Image 1 (cartoon, rainbow, N blue to C red):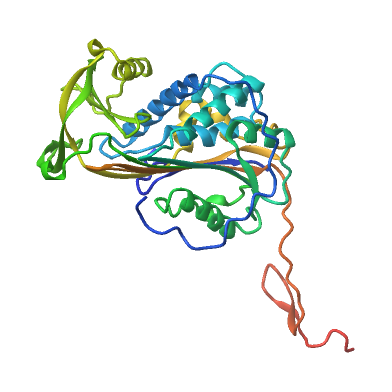
Image 2: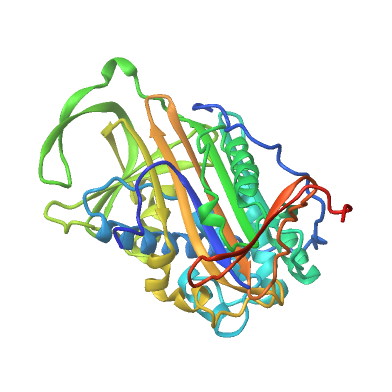
Length: 424
């Protein structure tokens, strides 16, 4: 697992294999236009909350596995972004592959139009979070090699559920160019927070890439006063005590339940809040609340009644986190292994699609006195099962050499220079 988890900068990338602040976006080729989009069907209104609960349970499971693999490391991930990237892949899965993915993703028991309606409601709810003082921006895309066929029914499904269109990039013929174009799109969507996600090597043999990018810049409803920020001791996971800068503020809603002390830190407008969760003393090295317990805690924090939650001041460290992980091994171990094997069935995406080849995530999170800046992205790439890629053509249009040789000994039987093929 250690080789699977690399802690660096932040975005989620998943690849399917088959036959406000920060640096400027990476330079490179301009993102190609969306040249094809499925028909987005406006479904009946659905409840997005079961999908929020599913993404929370899925995110807790991923965080727990990651923490157990790297118990001393800071970790930041975006369950919403990871669930979107894998969710777009799931729409093309069939049979046992679909059942395995649905189980790991904790998807509600719904299929067909009901599933697409739920995903559409989830996407719409995320878009509604953008408001004065809070910027929430996202981008979902399907990138496909021009030589591959993508089913119209799949394009309709991802357009309906995620609003995603298709961009053509030379994934099979020129993965370096494709990586630059996809990275540039992600960098733009994350305001430069994630300038690079893919490498040409990571796209070797990949014919489709599904990407999700998410950016958040949110101001606190009650900002912390910078003048109150001061150093204090922190017991790190490696057993050492370190000095960190603590922000100090007062009168936040708090709940104590299931061995956790939780504090709600609302952002401007009241649509978003950060929940800070402190485990009890003596908790294990990777304590996590269960999904049900966390649901109870967040519900009590959000309830209007004064009896549901108390009030307290907090001392919260300033943090600047970034993580990057290759999650293929982790997800395989969670029960999604068939989706990464030649036995996978992604014929709902294309008759040429085989299986998931890579899942990457990168994410960033900065928490300061004024608010929070965070970003994440997910890409799911798929390679074709057995497609012969026409090699690039080399034209011998100037004088050249010919060598006839014994392959075993290297003995040159004939050697020639062709200066003019038209001459005798």
